[in-house]
Length: 326
Figure 1 (cartoon, rainbow, N blue to C red):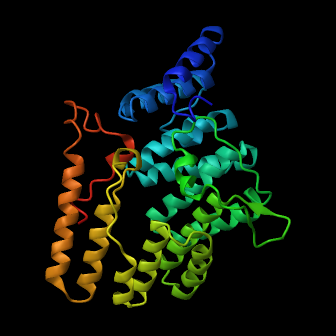
Figure 2 (cartoon, helix red, strand yellow; figure 1 turned 45 degrees about the vertical axis):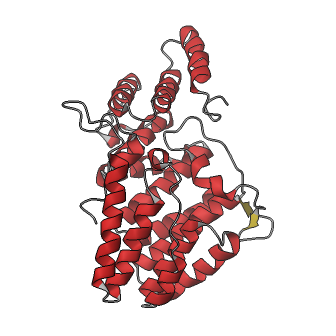
Figure 3 (cartoon, rainbow, N blue to C red; figure 1 turned 30 degrees about the vertical axis):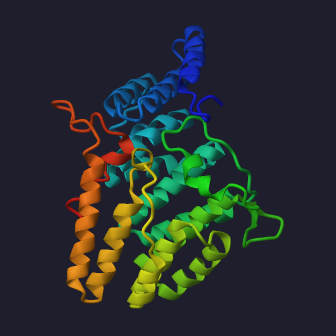
């Protein structure tokens, strides 16, 4: 509870007391390592990975060898390693681990199973496997989430709360497979976004539009919804309407927490649209603004320690350098 309230000092004190009575309990050691990592603002990733490696040895498995994962109690350590690799953009390695965890999905605690499935769907998209993303969404809708239970996670490195924060207060939504079955609204929105992105990757514009219509009913004003609407119009070649959907957002100052900037994405997307319209001067202007904002955000971080290129920066921002993409 203290962890969910971001009261990390209190959580560490409680875990330390628990550790004194259960000094060899790998779950206690693991949870303490996770809390310490969040307390440090997710900047001590090397220390976390060393802790995960040590815990894995205690559990008689090897994080470098996903095949060594044979027991459900080992899954939470491998999952956090997969999250770390995902943030570092090492998607193939993350996929190997997640695929192995998914083979045990029926034995997992449902909150962990949900997070594994969402991360696996995201990795499939990053590796350009949109059909597999749609398969994963179908699995979650028909098997994993069909009863609509909303469970809390036990100290994962990736928080569901942040993913669903913009959906609080919305009524639960009836799923498409029966009036008696419910899916939590935040989860429903995440699933819809995955469907739209996967269908756009497959150039299935009509299907993407149908899913977008459902998402618009659920979450019409969210920035992510408007961005997907703009992207769908862009794929249809309706550049003028696509441009109208984009609005310059205010800098929310949460780049360190989110690992992405709405301002950077706005200028980048606007530049892409102007480039497609043949307005290259305007495109160049917005790309430059995007680059400048990206450089400004990264200038806030201290320089990495010698021999440790990912130190002094929150994990979620390590793979967020847009300079060479833009």
